[in-house]
View 1: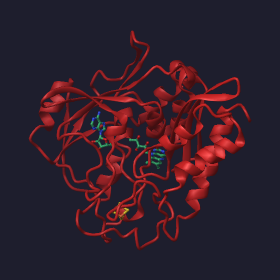
View 2 (view 1 turned 180 degrees about the vertical axis):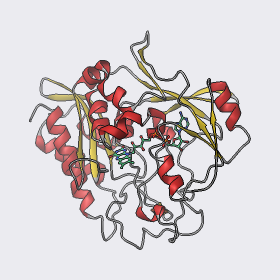
View 3 (view 1 turned 45 degrees about the horizontal axis):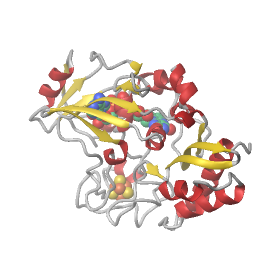
Length: 328
Ligand SMILES: Cc1cc2nc3c(=O)[nH]c(=O)nc-3n(C[C@H](O)[C@H](O)[C@H](O)COP(=O)(O)OP(=O)(O)OC[C@H]3O[C@@H](n4cnc5c(N)ncnc54)[C@H](O)[C@@H]3O)c2cc1C
Ligand code: SF4
C-alpha cells in the first residue's frame, strides 16, 4: 500500500476545502471498498479525508413526503429504517441482499453510490484494463466474462455496476444532493452514473472535490408494493448475476404504473423503461410479464461466457413482477 495522510474534518465546508485542488485526495466513508482498492494498489490516494464526523447520518421525512438520507447513513440503518421498510421494501431488500451484516454496518450511502466494479481484470494490475489504466485495452472483452454486463456496454468496457442499493434507487428515481467548490446542486439518479462509452474510467458526473451530501427518495405511494429479486452464485455475500427492483401499481388486475430497474447485467444501474412501457395499462398476467422482459432484453449484447445472463435477467424480472403483481 502507498503511504497516505489521513485528515479528519468536522463539517462539509472543511471536507470540500481539503479535497479542492488536490487530484490525489479522496473522501472515505466506511472504507469497505476504497481500502481494499488501496491495498491492491488500484486506488493510490495521497490524502484521505475521513467523513465520519460530518453531520450526515440522519434519515428524515421532508414536508413534501420525500425521504432525505444523509450520505453517512449506514447501509444497515437505511435498510432497517421503519419508513424504508414500510414505504420502499425494494430498497430495504436490495440493501439486505448485498455484502454481509458486518460490511453493511459500516458501509455508507455515499460510498455505496461510488463503489467500483468487480471485474476480475480491474483488480489484476498485470492485465490491461481501460477503466484502471485508460487506453490500455479491455481484457474482459476477449477474456473470461461470465460476470460481465450485457446492457450499456461499449467497445472499451463491459464491466457490470456492482451495487444492489443503486438498482432500487434507480427505480425510485432518487435525487443525489451534492456540494462542491461552486456550491450545492442536485443530480437526477439517471444522470449520476455514466455509461462506459469511450472513457470507462469516468464513472459518474461528479466534479473533483464534490461531496455527496444526501440521497432524496421521492414519495411514491405504490412503492409499498415492491420487491428486489437477486440471483447470485452463493446465497449470501455475493454480487448479483442478475437482479430486478420492481414497484407495481395494479388496479383491477391491470398495471397502472410500473418502476423497474435491473442489476448485475448493466454497466450502470439499469432503468428498464422499455419493460415499464410494455406493462402500462396491460393486464398483470404472466404473458404480459414475459413480453415486458423480452422487450427490455431484446438488445442485450452478450459474450461467449455471459450469454446465459439474457435469459437469467428475463426470469429474474418476471419473478419480481409475479411477486408484485399478486401472483406469488
Ligand atoms: C466482500 C464484499 C462483498 C460485497 N458485496 C456487495 C453486494 O453483494 N452488493 C453490493 O451492493 N455491495 C457489496 N459490497 C460493496 C459494499 O456495498 C461497498 O463497499 C460499500 O457500500 C461502500 O461504502 P463505503 O462507505 O465503505 O465506501 P468507501 O469505501 O469509504 O468509499 C467508496 C468510494 O466512495 C467515495 N465516497 C464515500 N463517501 C463519499 C461522499 N459522501 N461523497 C463523495 N465521495 C464519497 C470514496 O472516495 C470512494 O471512492 C461488498 C463489499 C465487500 C468488501
Ligand atoms: S470490462 Fe472494464 S473494468 Fe473490466 S477489463 Fe474491461 S475495461 Fe477493465
